[in-house]
Amino acid sequence: MATQMAKDPQKTAVTTELQVISGNALDIPMYQLLKEDGTVHKGVKLPEIGKELALKMFSTMQFIRILDERMIAAQRQGRISFYLSSLGEEAAAIGSAAALKFEDMIMGQYREQGALAFRGFTIDQFMNQLFSNELDLGKGRQMPVHYGCADLNFMTISSPLGTQIPQATGYAYGQKQSGEKTCTLCYFGEGAASEGDFHAGLNMAAVFKVPVIFFCRNNGYAISTPANEQFAGDGIAPRAVGYGMKAIRVDGNDIFAVYQAVQEARRLAVEENEPVLIEAMSYRMAGHSTSDDPSGYRSKEEEEARRKREPMIRFRNWLVKQGWISEEEADAQMQQHKEEVLAALKRAETVAAPHVDEIIVDVYDEPTQALKDQLEALKAHIRQYPDAYPATSGGVK
Image (cartoon, rainbow, N blue to C red):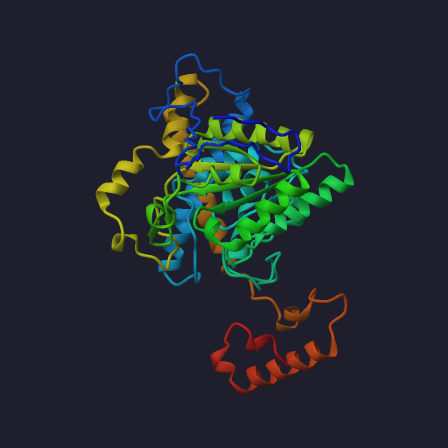
């Protein structure tokens, strides 16, 4: 066999021997620092995370756990229309957000409320969005859990699956051109990696060498479809190699491993303009949404087995062993979050809905005549059928 590697990147090695490469030839290991019981692997050096940051990360995990549990109950009670839980995936969002700079842009899918909370989104801001009231930053126009906050560099979430992926590439291209030394982190699930936007976004990022981190939460299921029915290859991380991009596979339930993986990915993105694909291996312990019943496609035994690997208990065990929090303090903190979430919920559901006029504000710099005409037609309809629009009809004259 004779081979010769050409220096020209447009040329490849030449061989006289036929080679068929296996689809699983690339075996990417999963990076893990913290074991499932909260102990550290022997010889491992943890990232430099001080007590203050570690406790902030833990408190944010507790808050999101309570928020998710309370709002699922609120949806069941008919108080909100819809909710998506991040139960079991909190470490992936919070650990990654903690590793970024505040100036970096975050583009979420719909399970990254932990990243937004870590950045400073308040409990009242969460509730106002979930209830679509007049204090909602989105003016009540979005579905629940479709958060956005310009002040916190968190792009508004969009319902169509995967659209944020090529948008992240475009935004990161602008960051590169500006010379700001910032990056964009884009979250999505392994199901979204089957969308065409995934392939277009990653290919553009690799070709134009933009500072973007693609963060895939592989939580095992795309709604009701298990990962082994979504793709034949070894997960999502190996796809990066096909685009000439760097890849990391990390334990998404290990907050330290996630933090360090994103730290390194950010360094590559900002300092070397190298896009990075991170695959965080986790598990969705709740249903896909409040419209989903996971008992139809997975067993209780599977859920219980995976519950033992969940991230918050793992991190809590480490913090207790470190002496940075006691069991009693952790429990008291959890109770405080419960009280605060419940109080905020009660406040938000008493706030009025946005005035109907708000529906055309901010669409254009000045509302077009067509929008004004449509608004008047809507008002006429509401006046005709006021009983069908009890939350809105009072504001229509």
